[in-house]
Image (cartoon, rainbow, N blue to C red; front, side, top):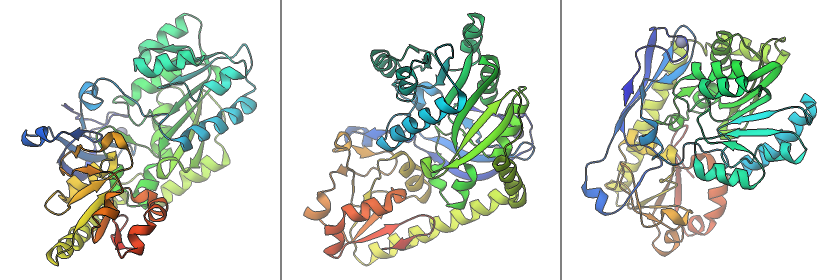
Length: 409
Ligand SMILES: [Zn+2]
């Protein structure tokens, strides 16, 4: 683990701590019963904002080998919704950019090639870049040529030297995961053709703050972007942020368009003005978020403790997800308060959650051994889970939705 001493984007030392979660386990780690006896690795999770360029970022960097277990660095093609989104997006981009057989579409962190496949199917040359061997092999098998490597300046230099520059560079949920955004931006500048465009999706920090979604903060997510901070990063590399579209991915994201030159679109102009007006580039904006986060924690712990004191049995839904690790660790909720966890993913059954040490069971357990309360860690899927758990609720079970402020439904 390394601790940064200056802004990851502009290098300024004028960074202030917004929110400290203390030392928390890495998300996406599950434990066996034997591992519960061994002390767990925990890493500091501290959120800072740069007062010069407005970039929100983690202070510490965990070694990617530790962070990703050395095998699965990126998350791109996990959900069917995301795949459908990519397919719709590919077609839209193909038409808008006028791409053809002499073009090149490159994707950073291309995973199994799901986003590039529609371009390849339309006869447009594509190249995926991804460090994970398994997904890269799957992409190759599906007709998407893939370099097994990290997207960054060395790869961009090699491709540009070989005359392979990108008319379109794609990156979905990757800029926010890289440790060095300047290397990513420099690689983008090197790789794009003179009139090329990069289209990058990143979670939108203002949506995270507005929703009180402090559980979006975890070790893998190194940076938290606004249009203001993204414009600043790319400007330092001779590029311009020309458009930003707000989309629903991951509870609110920005789809950024970056080019060498071009005019700022009216909606980006409006978004930058909105961020200025709301102070998204100021410490005060995030200090308010930190205060609301602390209040949420206190209310949640009070609610669960008083239910427990009255003899309630409590289970947790979605406690094995990445976001739940931050929620449970920060609130100090563990097996002393919660009897067990349920999750739909069969690969997680029989394992224990990191930090909180809850045993994970199939959701059927809620019917066979019903708790009085169900803590919905996967609160962003409230509607779906409430529909699925109709039987549990019909039998008198109640659900606690923790964020933005704890409530019982
Ligand atoms: Zn900065």
